[in-house]
Image 1 (cartoon, rainbow, N blue to C red):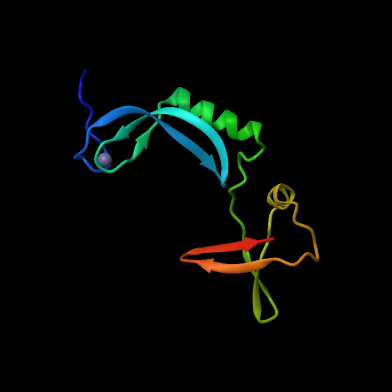
Image 2: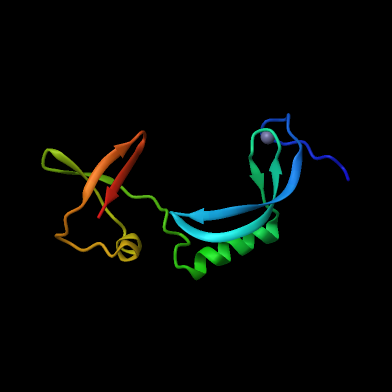
Length: 110
Ligand SMILES: [Zn+2]
């Protein structure tokens, strides 16, 4: 078998294995991948990538990550929550939510 060098760290070799895929905290199952023995980076082929997309679409979470604009609301800033995300989280107008930073992320918990 030809040894494949990892294109990320350039030190490890790629080995066949399985990776557990998740998107937005929702598990999509285990998929075959090539995994680097050094840095742990994993690579999936086109067919597997398509299968992961199909699993995400089936669970209704495909495309939930999207751009939004930060606007001004009085002295505060407001972030528009797109309908698809509000529906996915079952977030309603007037509902209380907990907001906190996580490094460069903004987390909103219902
Ligand atoms: Zn590597």
